[in-house]
Image (cartoon, rainbow, N blue to C red; front, side):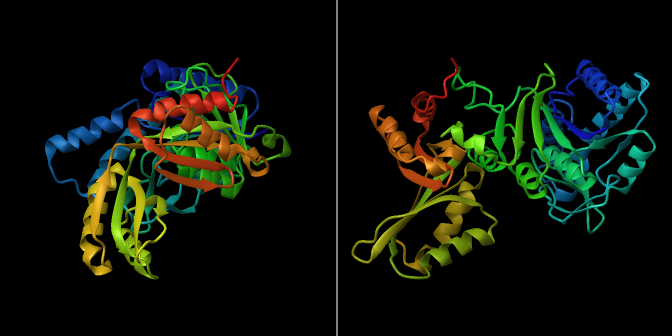
Amino acid sequence: MALVVQKYGGTSVGDAERIRAVADHVARTRAGGDDVVVVVSAMGKFTDDLIRLADDVSPTRPPRELDMLLTAGERISMALVSMALAARDVESASFTGSQAGIITDTDHTRAKILEMRPDRIREALDDGLVPVVAGFQGVSTDRDITTLGRGGSDVTAVALAAALGADVCEIYTDVTGVFSADPRVVPKARRLAKVSFDEMLEIAATGGRVLMLRSVEFARRHHVPLHVRSSFTWEPGTWIVEEDATMEDAVVSAVTDDTSEAKVTVGGVPDRPGIAAHLFRALADRSINVDMIVQNTGANGLTDISFTVAKTDLDAARDACTTVKDEIGAAEVSTDDDIGRVTIVGAGMKSSPGVTALMFETLSTNGINIEMISTSSIRISCVVRADRVADAVRHLHTAFGLDAA
């Protein structure tokens, strides 16, 4: 007998028919002899609808009250799934995030889990019940309801799987797994049978939209195997597991794309110690997350520093840089929101020379100019013009032999 945590996303519980299908699958899993813990997201676009309603009601949205509002979606889902299970003679009990023992910090709308106290979930399992837990939420150390940010139900599921010692955490969505590229961009993209945690972290961080980055980090840290599957076909999907020797057979596993970032350049900066520290401390103090960073070779005692941030943080980043411009002796601050990033990811890159050359040659041959470069042992990212991102992904996907036959 195994313990399985099954997380169902918004499309998986989007309407009454989908909820009944989920209940059928949970019942089948139970009939197979496994214990099941279910984690659910809000139905369809319900969270977006609540945000729009909040905007209609007031231009002011206190974070505490917004969290209280948004957690209603998952509570509705958990109750409906439990009712659907009851119709199939499967005894269950629904739990909010706080009832499930998910303790978070006090940062409303993007709280982080500090501790798991799943005593009530264990008791429900011991009593032969299927616990159905509302994802995306917890309770803070100040005893307020909190939310974990977009995609937070993935984090809920992985955290519960880790705390309960589950054998696997299944993530059900509307795609059949993790693909070698976004199928909407590359029609020949193929589903990957197995991906390492490190590869999945890079895929999630560079534009892969199947799993939330924090959930993969949590799974790697606590050694929780993940299985990404479709709730529309129920077929086997993609396993995210510890790296093994066979994973290095493929030099590049995936090509990802991301057009959600913008570039900031601080030009004419004095080329001396402490300048970069002063600049990036100003950004950190405004909670602005910086991604790629490039500092040009100094000339005549001056240099340029360019970096990327989320487009949603662009105005704040520009203001922060403008505020410290005179303090650090910079000449100018400029921004560019018409960029995109294309990335190749693969465990086999660590032991395969020539990958960088092939990537750059492929982009050059197709007239795609590289503006910034960032690397890790299993990733190479290039910033290019936004309107060339899709072309870059398709050409790289073919160049590295990833096209499906």
